[in-house]
Image (tube, rainbow, N blue to C red; front, side):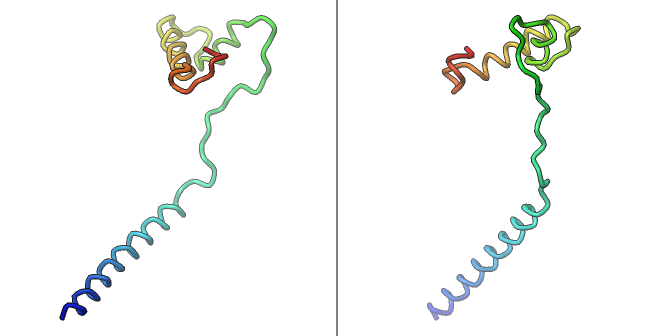
Length: 91
């Protein structure tokens, strides 16, 4: 009797594992082939930073409001802070 219950339990566990495996496989197949990456500036840096180059680095337009520029700058600085795993050079 006890062995029968163990077999039934294993069968139920196997059914759930199989169901989960099939769902995971279908989700894996349905994902996009290549991850969608943000576009980034392909050019090099100029000897003296221009407003255009600064706007490209911050991801804002040159004509953006000062508050939007400050928020973008804050985001970049927080992302590159050494205490958060960023670069000591950039901070």
